[in-house]
Image (cartoon, rainbow, N blue to C red; front, side, top):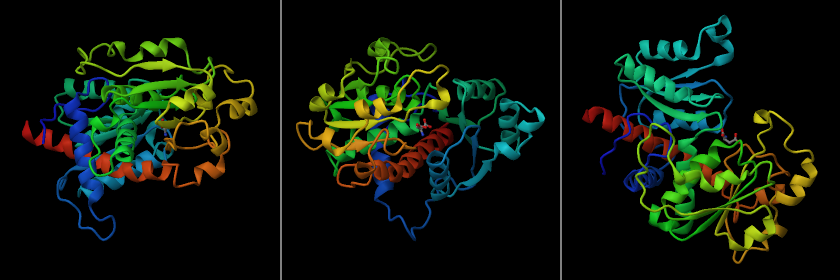
Length: 340
Ligand code: ASP
């Protein structure tokens, strides 16, 4: 296995080709293990993984916890509604409490951008060995989702050998609320790193022009981009023009909870212009897969019948792939930790 250099996983902007290869290889191996009745792997025996979700989650938290258990870790779940946050304790002090209880890995989700990065910095300053895995911060980043989407795409293009190369020269269409989506941002780093182009599609209020230059410079503090040549990003506001060019399409949820102003006056119109259904997919040059990170607003981003069409829609597959992808991340972090 390639050397793993990420003590914390906060962002995909500093992932190299080798990093993507390692994650996809391991995900594929873990995915091939029998799912039921399988003995646990001992990789994280004696380690404590704490899931600190300060924002709601169904699949990400459960799949991190299942992944940790499959690697024999102890798992502690933090429940914000019954916690001392209600007595005024801060996010960082809450996290440090779990570190004091012996957490080796903190899996952190927060509505504010940069909380996982700030926490990782606070742990470094305090000389703690606990590592931080970002499970979604504000609009910024959702690395494990970006990686499980990448695996799902690679596996669709080459089920026997899903690797970053499978995406080369493909065009991946992402439709919807790009502006508020941390999933879109993580996917942009991951997909372009593998040599695929991305088409972003949605109303101008949700797909601003400056996204075209999104991967041109990594965020401050991450050093130079380890990827020599990335795929390109194109913006197309008309779905009927974008679909014929696409090799796969990912729909994103309208993130009403993050919209500070009313950026979308008419949901029916949105559904008509950007909602995916069988009829619109007829515009594609060939049958293409449909992805969505979930949760789905049924009938708005994807029609019910398309969502239930397993021959096209990979939403369940994404959920399933979330577990081996998160096992791969926890495994790589634990392996790098014991090597230091
Ligand atoms: N579950 C994903 C996230 O946490 C996508 C979404 O909520 O729309 O970002």
